Amino acid sequence: MREPEKIPVDGPAIRVRNLVNEIGGELLHDEIDLDVSYGEVLAVVGGSGSGKSVLLRTIIGLHKPKSGTIEVFGRNIETLTDDQMHQMRTRCGVLFQEGALFSSQTVFENVRVPLQEMMDLPQDLMDGIASMKLSMVGLPVDAGSKFPSELSGGMRKRASLARALALDPSLLFLDEPTAGLDPIAASGIDLLIWRLQKGLKLTTFMVTHDIATLQAVADRVAVLVDRKLRIGTFESFRSDPHPWIYAYFNGPRARAVSAG
Image (cartoon, rainbow, N blue to C red; front, side, top):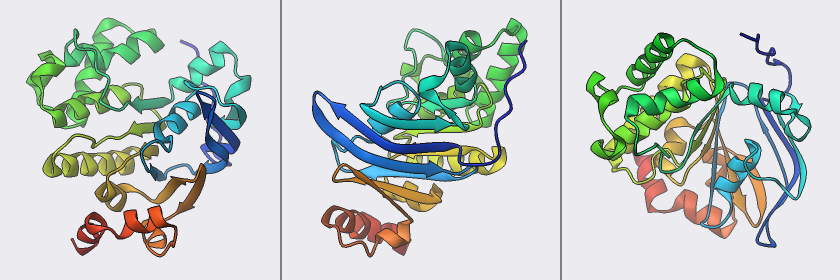
């Protein structure tokens, strides 16, 4: 098996400069700059249509920007060869919005997918890794043999997270990890993300609308507003006078989170 390239320890894990995105000819992101440091959790919030998920997909190479540069692990993703892009993706785990589990496969088979696609491993070793990842995210043993439709929403999120962790990534991308969950299940996912990030020393880029998740998990917050990106913390944004930012960070849900 080919030895993976060493991950640089200097500089940010993700570096975005002058990023411009358009969707259908309409400007979505205008000259965005962003650094994500190794070991931190950065959460991206913004109103509907602000392009939070598009930004995530652009960074992982699934959406081509109009202009700008994106570096992951110190490498410009636009200049990577297919083999280098493959190497980079083995170090990244992604939990897509709605989980994106394959409905025709069991949970166990879903978790094995990245291992089968990205690695050359014996079947018994892949089986062992998949079992370990399911245990890591708090799923019972019998969940592995079930199909996604047989699981609760919270369990499906955990299964999707197990798949995202299958390759032991250094960099984890989470797109709305608590969307559609009740408050108890959402709190469970928040705690799981926090524990995994601390235990595995992950760098995490997370898109969310859930203000409770920001308070529980995020080191820094990036707000997409007016096609720009503002960086700060939960507390610093509470005094920001921008109408959307003020309403989001000082609304009833934000006050309830802060009071709790």
